[in-house]
Length: 372
Image (tube, rainbow, N blue to C red; front, top):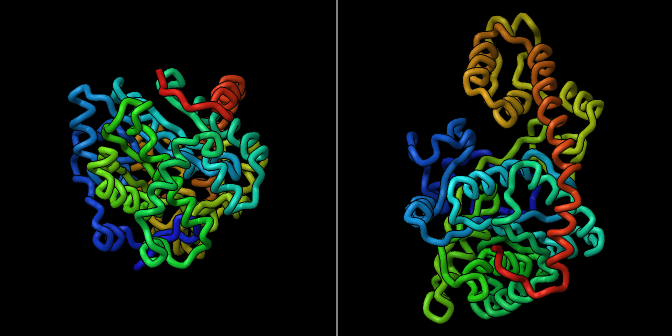
């Protein structure tokens, strides 16, 4: 595991090894500050860098920022939702926190060959999802990389701090465009610390564990620019990657039939969930005798992501392990759970589209202004 590829569709099989090899700090088993975070309680947050420092500063009432983003190459899937919900969780938890949401349209251009116009169209849907999930627009800045000169300026400055061998060591051998996309992401991460946005401050970046190379690069750049720019190394918190419904790779926009999106219709959800891989045994007899393996099951994962009830998740888990729960029953219940969430989310997203468009158009081609 010498290199993690943030652009790959493969998943991470050994999180403990990832934590040890790259110096990520494991989250404590009982961390009072996160007990109201469902993903933490359910073991889906796997580690952090300086999260404790960020929380201490935020609790002290100091100005802090939460930043993450999305490559607008498709509509939200579950992985996008988890990142969004982590951002929103910390925005709501700390009233002195501003949320920055970067639309990585430049990365979509070089990695997916997608036009900036198409990225804007998709980004409106992405931002509507953010609002529907609970983002508070009055304490948020949504922007496109292509319209953020300060981000490009930072990327240019940072390009003087890296060598090709250094980038290859972090990311493996990639196109030069992807290396520069990584520098632009570093510019995103440090945007809240620039003078127009109040200067240096703690910034928390919630991301999937496969994005750690970007955090390591940014923290190294912060050390190099501690004196001239006053940069503070960003904090981060990592969630497990979402398994595709095939049970093999991570859920990815590149494989639409094995992912669940927040725009799926009822018929699409039914087709995907009922045909999903499970952790069940080959026969009903074996299932009852040996029990299932929910740890391997993307259908069980759906309960972890969409249920509001920890007790319900424990019930499903132990019924599966004991053999009392069959896969057909589990799929039906998971489908009902996801459909219930989607029905409410569709309504909220539709109502949020006008505001989402306004947030994006407002930043297009203009000098970015700090959030209120």
